[in-house]
Image (cartoon, rainbow, N blue to C red; front, side, top):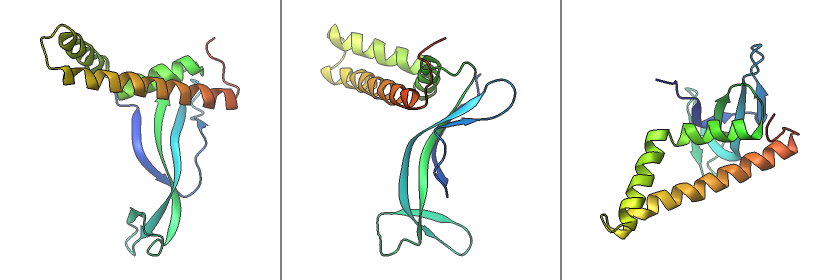
Length: 142
């Protein structure tokens, strides 16, 4: 079984690099995405709580998601790695089967929604990856 390469909800004091090389000699890198600045409350023991209450906030940090991507460094590889991490093949297959069953009237119409949501998310992921790769001069493929 493949190790999970996606980590969500990470926090950093400084804004992470979108493309962060692991310098391991194998071309592996982290694709950091969904980066946003958040207000936080830090307690004396080092715990951190994200807050929307500006008056209680003791500072700001950057919250983001990160996926480990193996060589090659291309938009297609980043996209497929991230998509597979978010939606493993079994999950995608289940969504397709339920959608097709709903299309045939074997399941309720509402069974279509999860697959339709997956397709919308897939498009959003593709747009995000393509925009970042254009910014960082990463080719579409080799």
